[in-house]
Image (cartoon, rainbow, N blue to C red; front, side, top):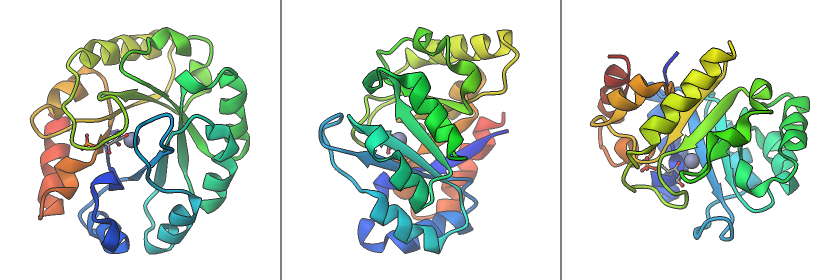
Length: 218
Ligand code: DX5
Ligand code: ZN
């Protein structure tokens, strides 16, 4: 099942409610919310108070991507604020299994995110607990970067691993996704596509989403 999750990192933050409304009306599946702490990544964005406030303007599921050194200090606040799914980075979590189980116990969907240089082996013993794996297809921190082509092989490897185990785990990709590459990324095995600049930099959000969705389904 293909889903498109526009990242509000590329939205106009002075009109955040309207921006979210525009993507909901244009047919987005999820809202992707990038949380950056200025330590794990060289950028700062938003916290639970913003999530709580935008929770009132849309029915769309909130997919919260935590790019933080200490995500477990904040997951409960983000879940209380209205997160439907949370992605935590494997690279910062010595007790990854415990972190996954905590988010699941709270009734929230859970994903593990992997930076481009992080091998999928790190998931071997936790994969069956996950709803989704987030393959970063850029180095996290900024919107508008170029897709890293070597991630196509990584997506295929993960797809094979999930299939060989007979699991039902979604593969999400994040970074540099556009109508130009989404077909190839989808063919590699991804089914949930984060798209920041390729949605919010377009005036016609419905056309932008349609361009992504139609090519991903080819
Ligand atoms: C990058 C973020 C992405 C980003 C994607 O660190 O995790 O979600 O907003 O933006 P685009 O689609 O412009 O690469
Ligand atoms: Zn993201």
